[in-house]
Length: 124
Image (cartoon, rainbow, N blue to C red; front, side):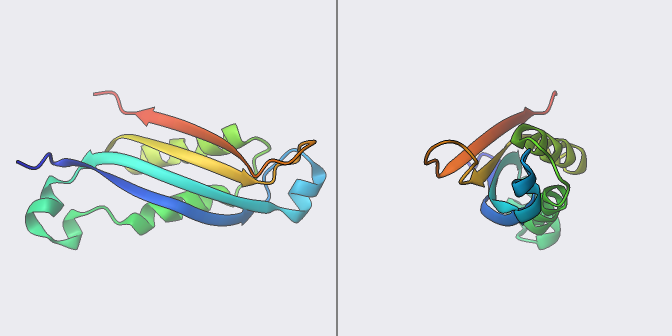
């Protein structure tokens, strides 16, 4: 028997955005990646094999891209806006996570990425 709840993942979405506190971050921007992982009931799509019964992944991407275009000083704020947008636009997710990664954050040392991950669980 198939468990009708499954996971949709969009991993490694890439954006050049202008998030950060420092003026140079706001002016030059930086490379960001966003990873999304969400759990939802897939029973209709499993049964019918019809696109109309599945969630259109591009809609999730478009929601994230829209939020990436709006400046935030903090990764926490940016990730929170993405979570809020997804939770209100895609009520079919019972839970999901969003990870926002910023390449080469401005610190006094070598750091490849800084990351913030937020988790959302819909109340039943």
